[in-house]
Image (cartoon, rainbow, N blue to C red; front, side):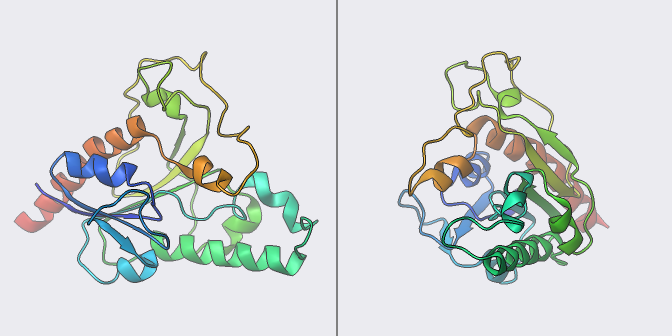
Length: 222
C-alpha cells in the first residue's frame, strides 16, 4: 500500500528518501531549503504543512531540541554568554509547543517524534506527555564499521500507532564512534549533529511503512 508520508524538520532528506525508495509518496519539510535539489521538499513550518493535506504518517525526525534535552538543562539556570535566562526559558517553551503540536496532531493516524532524552522542565510543558516508546543507538542498525551508522548517539522515539524499531544491524557497539558528541564548534555544528543515519532511516521506512499500511488498510476495509 502506497502511503503519504511527511518527514518534518528534515533538511537532509535521508528519511524521506528511504520511504520513497520503497514506493511511498514521501515529502520532507523544514524551515530551511533542502540540502540537495529536490521537488519533494517543502519549505515551511511542519505545523502548517501537516494540516494542509491528508497524511498517513507523520515522522518528525529532528525537531529543535537544544532546550528540551538533558544536555542543555544547565542553561536554564545560567545562560550562556550573550544570552539571558529569559531567552533560554522562552526557547524551552517554543520547543515544547512544537513537540506538543506534532505529537497531538489529531487527523494523522501514525506519528513518530524523535528527540534526545528530555529533562523534567520539558516534560512538564508537553501536552499529553508520556515516556518515550524506545531508545536506541545508531550502531544497532549498521553493518559496516566504517559506515555512517556506526555512531554512539542515544536517540528516543515517541510513537503513536507505530511499532518500536527492531535493530537490523550486525555491529556490537565496540567500534562505534563518538563523533556526534565531539563535533568541532562552528556554524554548521548543529547541522552535522542532527544529521540522521541511513540504516535507521531504512528500518523506519520498512518497518513503519509495513505497520502503517496494515493499520490504514484495515481501517479502510471497515
